[in-house]
Amino acid sequence: MQKITIAIDGFSSCGKSTMAKALAQKLNYSYIDTGAMYRSVTLYALQNKLIDSKKKHDFTKLIEHLPKIKVEFIYNPTLHASEAFLNGKNVDREIRSMEVNENVSAVSSVKEVRGKMVNMQREMGKHKAVVMDGRDIGTNVFPDAELKIFMTADNMVRAQRRLDELSSHGDYHDINEVLQNLLKRDHADMNRKENPLIQAKDAIILDNTDLNKEQQLEFVIKLIADMQLTKDQAQ
Image (spheres, rainbow, N blue to C red):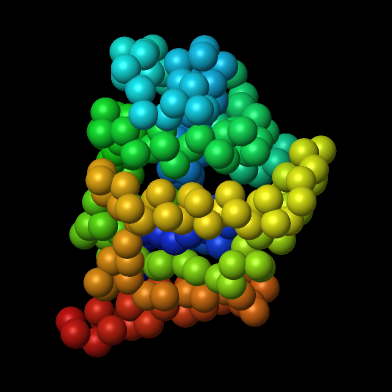
């Protein structure tokens, strides 16, 4: 089967990362969680007091520090998955905190931050055989990706998923607080100046409100098989 680039975009807590990881494992492809990259930059900014949660408009110090920030993914053989590392330290758990959630949309809207991350993402995926998920993969990072998926789900379902994720890490919140945070992020992601969250014209919508992980994976695998069949018939 021909190696392709698969771009998965969509709203927060739609299961993009879960889907992308499972799909990459099924196809023996590389998986790149671009959301984790922006979260890592946000964590760095918070840890080094480069941003003020109450004054998100000033990112001068963060921009100055960008050359010092290195984000990479290292495979964990025990978990059978790659984890995010920030300047050599495993931060895969820390970047899922509510504080990072509340600031990542603002940080990811900064032109200089996006420029650095997009360059890294394109370098990671230049040889194809990659599954990449985020907000602007199919519209900006890899506009020529052979397969583009746009994921969505009911707002309350998304909020419950995020609440469960936070709780699993010992970070407890009220579901209404989590819901408001998600809606706030949606608005910020869709209205930012630099590469906003929009559905690519040639993306296939996957609403997984009532689908389990296995059904979602089956849906995408069928899409890939149909693509390959269509190509073979055309030849």
